[in-house]
Image (cartoon, rainbow, N blue to C red):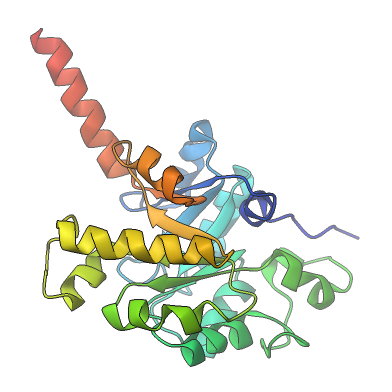
Length: 251
């Protein structure tokens, strides 16, 4: 019988290490995702809320991520049980749920993403569990649940949200947060960043794992805050590299 594949990202975070994920924005298919192997990411984040990832291609895309030794993580488009466990069934090792604003909504993520006795995930064998004996009794240890704190109401409710067990990462996302603070299109505004930093500090102080969108410019700052799940976006790295190449070409 096959062994259940270890979730590399979840394991590193449990060990207190930093895990680095790559957002797949701009990578349109399995062939492109395989080329991320040289970056050696811990995770690859597939975009199912704002991108073209859906039930028709999750299997193919997560399989490509398996091949490069990373954890396939999918952001779903809504906090709905069927969406969450179907995404896991198709091969995701982790899911990201947007706009989790209350303790009750966080508890709903756990119910949908974990088998009994922790939750009530639909009883079915994931692609990750093909050939694995007792998959349903083992899956909870490898399934990763990430919730997005991306509304000011969620920040205001954070103390209660942090009481929910079996959430692996509390990820503070500045884009939508800025909008709900009346700063639409200004995720880097000092007022927004102050709220982001405050939320990250509170997550870490509660002994939970904090996640953030990280760039070369703010990576050290986020480490100082105690963030251990880093998500980087290749378009930003490409832009930085292109600017540097042009600078050197004109020197």
